[in-house]
Length: 438
Image 1: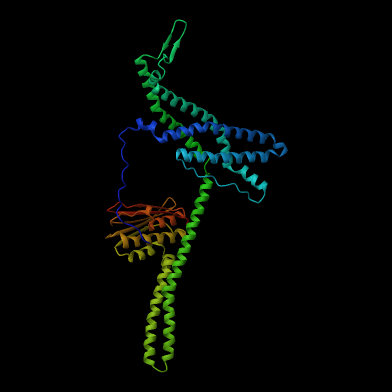
Image 2: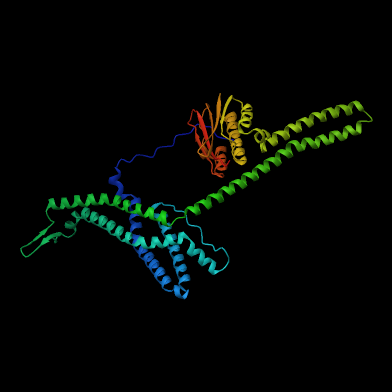
């Protein structure tokens, strides 16, 4: 397990703008992307509302003939397709990345199974609800955005009106039989420009407030369900577990091949030679048997170390307290171990806790340059808590592909959490949380 304990470098701060945000907002690309999103929302909202009303009314009306069921399912699938368009629009214009729902799959092959899956899917009905709700909101947001931007741009550019049309008196504010009132005086033009500028500066923020509602709607109604998220997490965790198990098997195979197996092969050859020399040169044979005896001891020690790396006997027999004390005794720095558990957790969780502490102490020995470390283990709220601290140089980081990142993935596979607090210069505190499952 290799963990990078190098000091962190400070990220360069983004350059500060000399122009305040309120003044530069109308000229930023974000404002125009959000305005484009609002403008496109109206036609898409009309399409979605039409699909929703048609699908529900036609499907419900034809239920007595059974044709309504596939019609309703087809309408729901069309709304799911429109939802994909909406998610793409939100991703391109708002930078909102909403996870797509899982595709509809029937429990059995066949059209009826697929139709049943569509009708049972909560995601499909959420798309139908979005189709109903989006159009009135799209009309409102379209109207507000167009009014803000058009009034603002018209007011700001109004001083150019007299220059472009010298024969015109300007905008008519009031007209009756007795006369007309025009915006043609310098003060009136200045006031119009000022009002237009204020409205134009407020337009991006008004549009941003409008699209914030769209963000909530798209993320809440068109995204993957909580069950989809959980299934994806379980699939990812299963992949991590499978990869970890395969890596452990390769490590065990390599250790056996390069270690104990090689020694046992050499031992068998030495004993064969000793057997041949036993009658001719008993002293040389006895010496070779003595050397073979030493090789047997080394091979046994290697097998014990390998077995301890798979699952130590002391952990099975005496629990975490004794097993972690044994791990701490092999650390290159003094380690204080405190274990306060009311009972033993599940065997699998106990093993993960043991190897987590073992790898963290290995990091302390190799990288931390510490003079002391502590290990605390306790139970709270049905969770097993582990905390390993050292007074080393710090700088441990899980975001750069280090061993800590792999350890975090292993804990996540069993609904665990790994939190690293390691500022440059130290100290380092790594806290792990595991389910108890006793």
